[in-house]
Structures are given as C-alpha cells and as structure tokens.
Length: 263
Image 1 (cartoon, one colour):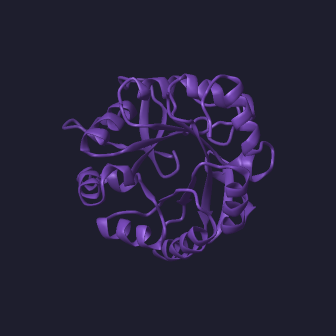
Image 2: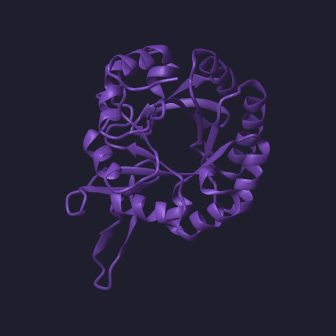
C-alpha cells in the first residue's frame, strides 16, 4: 500500500507573526503562529512547516520561542526553516521542539552543509527547500532562486557569463549529499492561487527517490490531486488555509475522492 499523502499548512513567520503575500511581496498579517498551528492540528493537518522569512539573528530567537510554544501545543511533526546555516543551528531548533529542518540558501552557498547535517542527525531530519522558477536556457527549464524568488542562484563562468543553477540537477545533487526530502516551491505560482506547477513537480520527481513536497499556487481543493498525480508525496499551502478559503478536511476529501490515500 502506498503511503498516505500528507497535507501541510505553511506558516511564513516574520517578526513573530504569520504573513502571506504574492510572490513574497505585499505581505499581509495572517495571525498568531501558535494559534494557527493549534487550529491546523485540530483540523487534521499531517505536519506543519514554519519558515522564518526575516531570519535575522533576532528572527531566529523569535522562531525558537515560537517553536517551543508550538511543540507544547501540537502533536504533529514540525519542520522549521529560515536562517539555518550550521549544524549548531539545527541542534538548537531540534532541542526547541522541531522534528525536521529545512535548509535553502546556506546549502546553495555551501552544499557540504547538507552532508554535515545528515551525518549528524540522519537524513530524515533534513528537508531541502528549493525555490524554483522557469528559466529558458537551463537543461530542465527551471532554475534555483534565492531571496524569495527574486535572485537567480548561480555563478559567473570564466568569461563572466552568468550560469544559472538548474533546479532539477540541484535537487538530485542534494539527495546524493543526504537530503531526506525536497520542499519544492514554485516561485512563479507562489500566492497566485492558480494551481501547482505540474511540470516542475514531474521534472523533479523523475530525478529523485526521496519524498517531494509540492508548494506554491494552491487556490482550491481541486488543485491538490493533480500535484499528487504528478508525483508529489505531500502538498503544502499557506494563503488558502490562513484566510479560510479552503479547510484541511476539504483537501483530504478531494485527494481521497481522486483515489489518493490520506490519513
């Protein structure tokens, strides 16, 4: 029997509040993270993801406190990301009550970090967050970005020409290094509510063996089954849950109705 598809609300936390925008701009306040987490736990969410989008030093202290308070309230796995740059940062978050850690920019800057975290804590703890956007000229058609999808992640070659980092190749390399899961953020779709980027999900699914979490673009319950059909093992959303447009139960009903196993 195949594993149940996980439904995961994402809490983008800035200065201790949950916020949401479109393509990471025009952020709106969406509430208190601990209250929202408790609500989602009651509604049947399978996991929660916290992303500290300010991730300054102060932001991380705030996140530690929120993680501790949330872990006391809820009994579903918590993934925490934002500003994780070292094995020690991971250790602090796990001690605060996180179950898994998401890394993004720091892993792009220094890919060895993936292996260091996996070696110390096991790859089941490590989620690689990939912010991907469409980019003609890359092998897969998708590149890795940083800074909320605003900057291309790559480097200049010997002639000074910019070389983008291919998103699918990066995901595959990270899995080889020890990433246990891929959180695949479709930056072009983020906050648009037009549906998941099916092409992106299929491209990454074809190259990695670890679970893939589809993120970015969910607008209604019917958007979730196609993401699972494309190869997602879990589906993540923020805006539609925070503002009450779609409930967790409706997503699970839609998935179940489409033949996907749910908890």
